[in-house]
Image 1: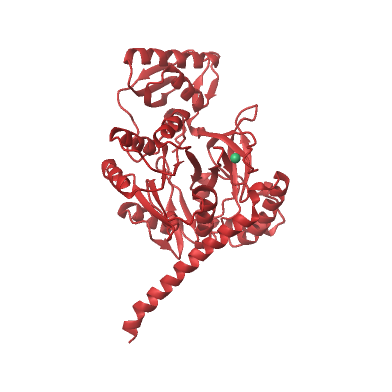
Image 2 (image 1 turned 180 degrees about the vertical axis):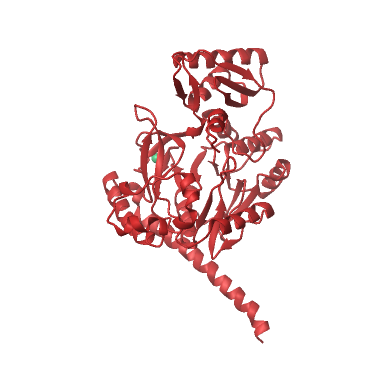
Length: 456
Ligand SMILES: [Zn+2]
């Protein structure tokens, strides 16, 4: 008897779990809609965040790392600012579920190798971040946090519709976090970036997806294939994620897909910002506290220090990201969340050269990308890498005259360097790209500072 009923009971419990999870998503989605935080004034939003922070503090009592900060009546400013290294070093004590880093890593690596991304640890989803090298990050998400994430994505990115829609998601690694979005109305289709591209494109073409989500480098490949094969893509929404989206890529992609490209700023540390109908990137200021660590004197660029008011399993408190964000101006779409004009890259990729007085000067990657786009509009791809103290390596793909393009590039870059009084810098053209398949696209990279400081 029991042998007969056991599988049925198991199935029933599983079914109930799924139903409960979907109800949870619906609950948070309704909550986001009813609250209408996006339209609240900045002052009111600050009060709401403070209230949510006080609520989060109660949960932090379960985190050995944060317990002492919560027992005392401390303000957010009294908590330590941490970075990825500290976050990972204190993994065991930061998380509130007693999960050990080595167990989480084991699960995440196994998933990465088998390409089966469903396993979890005591009901907690374990994910691996797209670290550029050895310093990988792991993240933990509970069912509740997963439901909140899906609801926020539905509210801000995908949009709700009673029509059945298909999403094609190109990722380096899948996660059950993303698959959680699957429902009768929304079917989620994972495309493994590690699989051969032709195979992926064929599948994508047959799928007839409504929404396409991928990083700009993958979007470019997809757009190229549509053009080459003379197929008109029929997406209703295309969303760029995970990499810096440059303006020339944006215009190319928008012309091929014939729509306004959306952007999502999402990383291991959470869902940070989304594009509004006016095409501006808004930070999720209802569940994130963003402190700004300014990188320039006129307070235009900053690295965000984020506190996620929804993450309890693995608290994200005053976590400093090394991204370079450019402050935007208030948007007239009706959403009062702070605007980022763009994400420029990472502070690790600031190009650092010595000027004629011998002083080290930091130059933002964006200056170089602008100089390169001014040099020629026939460049389809490039990589600019600082490998030595005063030396830049440049790889360029183009459909123009090699000599002329190289000459213009030299001139534009030299003019740029002259503005910073940098004189003796070697500009070397290299013959092949250095980024490998599946690696995150960072067109402008500083490999010199990273190796000299032994950073990863
Ligand atoms: Zn807006």
